[in-house]
Image 1 (spheres, one colour):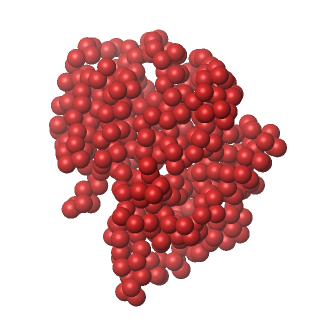
Image 2 (cartoon, helix red, strand yellow):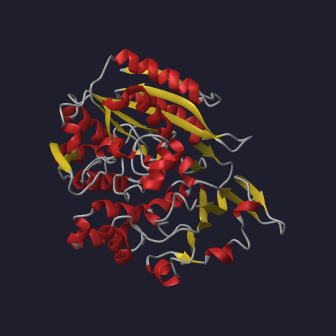
Image 3 (cartoon, rainbow, N blue to C red):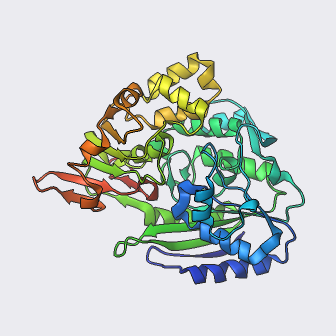
Length: 425
């Protein structure tokens, strides 16, 4: 059921309008004695979920007893990040999700269904796991808050991904990511419906039907004139149709179709947001369908300090590297440590160019040549590369350098999906 929908590629929903809309919907739901909110973590700072969570707190006060950022496999938020994103909400309301331990299995997706949606590529069962707090019957309302935007694993982010990945467990996270990787990232990105989403929807319909979850979904965009993030759409409801309408708008707003394949692409990773290739490889995922064969993808990553945000996954990335689908599938079949961490295998596939284009990572002082080349990337120090391609001198989109060189610049790969018609059909 859709409780509210509004949006277009030119709409600008102001903070005050957002508050009025949200409060009107909450009024319609009636009084609630105990409420939980599940917003994204700091990696989705631009989602506007932070201010919306503040609005929820202002509305419910003491009844909003628990706020659990949807960490998934990410590192816990710091106190500084919580304050920056969630403003005046008391820090004692926040809970940390542990995707390996603090979970409850609520059902199983059968292997036959997985085999069907993966087109016969996979046939394993999947344990449907969520943080055990979600199963507490004393919660009268759970608000899942977040942004719908193109995503490499599931097609379009948010909705049930916020639950089954954001506050989900290792078995479901690993196996769902592997479905996406084996099915093919370029067949999934930008699509509301995908094999991964089908599995999520199966789990929702069969095992979450009695949990009082309402989804508050934004569609956001960077204003071309001011450079500020603006809300183009707001969708509130509890079903796939609500999400699908948000996804349709996101495809209009966040999908950039370039008129020709990009031969040189510069992507900047904001140091406040991107400290690992686990997150920073959005620079690869989101641009790959726009890159020409033999293109150069130069990733400016001044704060890069690790590969995986989880220590076990970091070790696996260092051991196996980003070496393409055939290599990764072969190693996964032969090594139990990858079989037990299929999300890592999926990430290794996603982070490879499959030999089609060059990937040149440019980290700051915390990552060196041996580390970057050890996982299969080319290396150049950040300080050296910005002498030639300074973010301060580039604008989003096409640029022509003083020597006549043409390149394409992206200041934040998390905000969109780039492609040309030959690779998005």
